[in-house]
Length: 347
View (cartoon, rainbow, N blue to C red):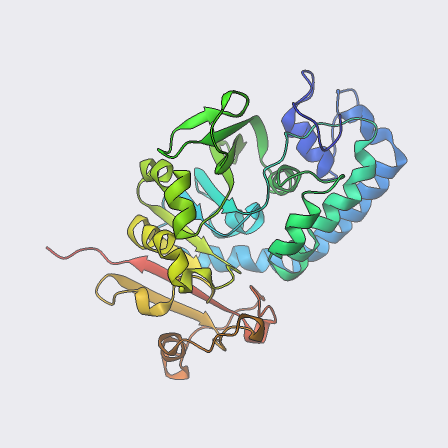
């Protein structure tokens, strides 16, 4: 079976499938490893390793160092709405989370397997990751077309690559649907409208078991009211949030329900200026630490700078510089991040 397979072959280990897609070593005597003998896979692996080493030195190592120095008090759950299949930065900013909840428009797709044809699809997987690796974000329209094609079907191959490259070992993968009440149903048994298609990936990393949920669904107010997503998410309680390259959707009224959910359920937020507008952080509830430079939205969004953000990033506040680029303004001298923490309530 190839990238568009319906189910994992009985004798194929999902951790080895992920490593195959990531161009990483797999035991050659295993059900997956035998396909790594193909010269095309060996070339893919070598090129991917070289590319990853460059990106790690230029970008990823610096993000890890920033996280270690600045992200304090993080909880066990991460809410990453509008993040799509970007486990790369979810893990970089919150490496110790136990539960990752990521949501985007990109389709989940079938559970990947490997056969003799799969190696010929790998360049398409690598191409789908190009913007995320080099610019730090996915372009939704581009991703939607790539992940609904004949070679790369869905977000799962991308999640597999990022999990494997993060040193995770996938233990179990299951597809499910949510009903409007937020209850989970196995994919194969669900008869209702598919408004929130999900995948649950159980994996181990750094000696502990963790879970990644990815949903393909509409995050507009009407979308979340119909899908049951936030009713499902309520059970995880207080957590962290990440917003990056979110098309400024949290700034608009059509996505206020998700924005309000985050402001209620997140105690720690890392975001660029596409996330929650500064004016929504109440001074008596939040401590805000700006980094980098705030210029305002890029022209394509047709929005001016937010006055509260201009004030927060003013030079008199001496925001520390970033040594890496992030988000739509991904030149180092133009990028910004905000670290927001909920203040303890006074008695």
